[in-house]
Length: 188
Image 1 (tube, rainbow, N blue to C red):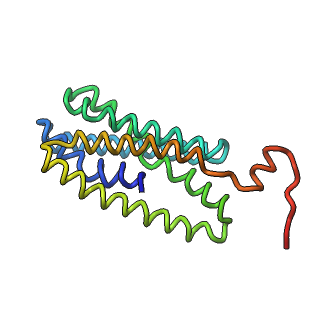
Image 2: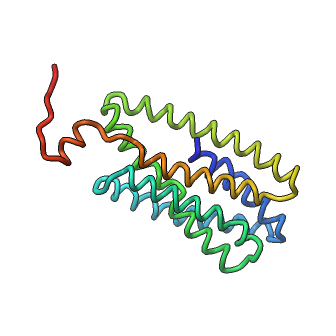
């Protein structure tokens, strides 16, 4: 849910209106989304490579922490458009969908290759619920408070919580045993 709340529910829906609120033309704001998309391709590809080689819990923690920090920075970047906004677009873009490969890997490790697709379907459903709730509440906050600052900060804070939660994911018994070098009993 936090992933959806911090990506398409917030940035995908509200970045252009937030930029417009700060005097940034819509076409330039849309250009920021395009830059984010280009860097997302690189970030997600690298994430897939890293997911095969590193602890996916730690990768998720890093990705969510960095996404959270970028969202905490966004109100400042919007207040001083220029280089800071482009830095946000590149930094956030590298992270946008980078969470998918380690999430798929963790779901497969935890539930097995036969059940992982169904579990990932439920994860995707939760993602969309988080996106929908955030799209609504961020719009409400903007209407009520006059800007998106609290919405960006709240989502950034949620990402930092997600980083901590990712570290709490337990490793499956087989992965723990392999890390310790002990054999895993096979039950039929």
